[in-house]
Every structure is written in C-alpha cells, then in structure tokens.
Length: 373
Image 1 (cartoon, rainbow, N blue to C red):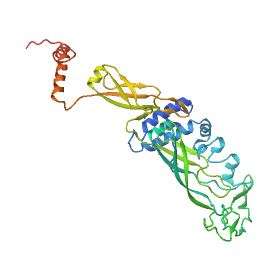
Image 2: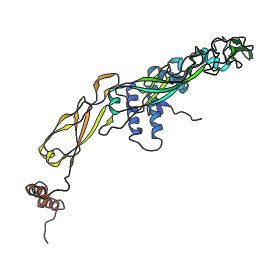
Image 3: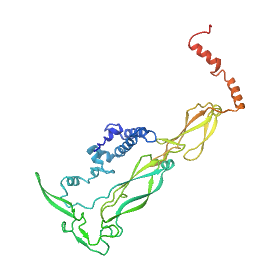
C-alpha cells in the first residue's frame, strides 16, 4: 500500500500556514509541475498531489478534519467535520465499523463514485462553458424498480433474516456484551428472493445505462482541476444514496496564448525598422484584436501589459488578469539588392553609435594602451 504524503509537506508549508500562504505555495508548485511545462517523469502525478492537497487545505472545514484525523478525516472527498472521518457519519458509525451495528441501522449501501475527463479549449477554460458528456453508470432497474422480480411475480421472504435483510449476532467482549448486525449474505440485504427474476436486470435490481450530462465548467478554471458533482455517480440498491461524479478538466493548449496564473502570455514579432521608429501593432486578445503602441527605440524582449484582458478569477468574473505581450525584434534575412543598399547607408550614418572605429577606440582604452606599433 502506498502511503500518502502529508498535505502540508506536499505544498511545502508549515501546519500553521495562513490561507494566503497556502494559496501562494499551491501556485508555485502547480506552475513547477504543470504537465504543459514539466515533461519529467512523475511530474503529472506530482501535479495531481499538489492539486489534491490544495483542495483540502484551502477549505477551512476540510482542513480542520485533516488536522485532527489526517488523511482518514478527508476520505471520500467533500468531507465536512466528522462526515469526513474515513467516510463515517459520526462516532456511532465509527463504532459500528469496529464492532458492527448495535442499533439495526445497517441499510442500503451508497453507490460507487465515478471519474470522467472533459476536454475544454483555452477560451472555454477562461470564460466558462457548458460541456455535454456521455456517462455509462449503474442505475436502479427501470423495469422492476430495483425489486429484482419480474413485474407481477412474487418475492419470497428470506428464511435466514426473516425479511429484515439483516442478521444479528451477540458478541461477548472484555468490557461488555454487544449485538452485531450485518447484511444478510443469503439475500444480499434484500429480505427476499424473486420467484421470477426480472428479465431486464436478471434479478440484480440495477442496470447499466448511458446518460448524457451537461457539465458546467466555471470561468477561470485551470488544467487538472477536479470538479465534484454530487449524486451523479452510480446508484446502488433502492433507497441507497447515489455516489458522486468527479470530472477532471483538461485544457487544450492554444496556438497563440499561454497562461501564468490569471495572466495571458503572448509573443509578437516586429522588424527592426518598426522597433526603431515606433509602430501601432494589432495584437490578438481573448476579447478580439486591440491596438498596442510600440514606442520608438523598443528593444527586443520588452514586455507590454494590457490590463484586464487576461483570465477571469473564479467566482469573480468582473475581476480579470492581464495580457502580457512580449515583443521580439527580428533580423531581416534574404534581402534584395535595394534593401542591402539602404541598410549600408543606414549603417554608415550610425558609425558614431558604438560601431567601427568608435568601438575600437573604446576597446583600446579599456586595456589602457596606445597603438605604438
């Protein structure tokens, strides 16, 4: 069995770290191990660990449960207080897990959780989207409604549990006598047998169905984020609680943009003449093209900030990051004769600007020598 790492250790923060420190550490770790940036073996798994740790420690209630009970306190996801203690509902259920139910509360089992992946575009991740997905899951049989018998036929009462679906046993222990209650193995807790099994589910009470679900992907979501949808997992026996659906979001890379936190990054190229003289460059953004003023004398690698044109903050669509445009000056190649002539003329006028003899004189001076042949 693989032992889970401590969530605080995963994020590299002390146990008393503030919410802001946890958020900052998460951003640093997520950026370091993001699959799009880090291709090393194990980086993807490490990214998932970081994301899981942040989901727990950023939630005050789940963090409290984790601080008190460790990983057992947050099993099953979405834990709240004692509900998260290994999936138990409180001290009574913890007791039942070790000694069996003493009050006959053993009822329908919860359905299994499901996992599904949804792929969204860069723009859909930025502004949110509704995505339709197909999901194969177990549901209560539509023909027998979970009763396991063909409609109109009888169900015989189980002789082992006498229709209760439970078997009670008395267990003597050092500190007293306890009554242990467990699900009847003869009838699987159903309390009886169908005379004629349901023709649709073969007497199982459940069937597999293909469902179409509309998943709401919130604005500002990041690659690798997990969305929990309660009650959309598999169903179990009638009356049992349905499991949950966990949707993992994968964001497709964009041909122009990349992302850093809530900022959008873009690289643009201009020729040397436009960099020297200044230029009004039309650049793409998530909201369409905008005009960017490139001042005269711009050097290669300079970054310009377009405020409010980045990624919306989750839950706060009015607040957005910025777009950072980094301009690179390109060197012309494959010049024709006229272009070469013009560049030679330009070069001659720039002789005093750090070129030719001026540069040679500076180098001479730096070594402290005269040319004494």
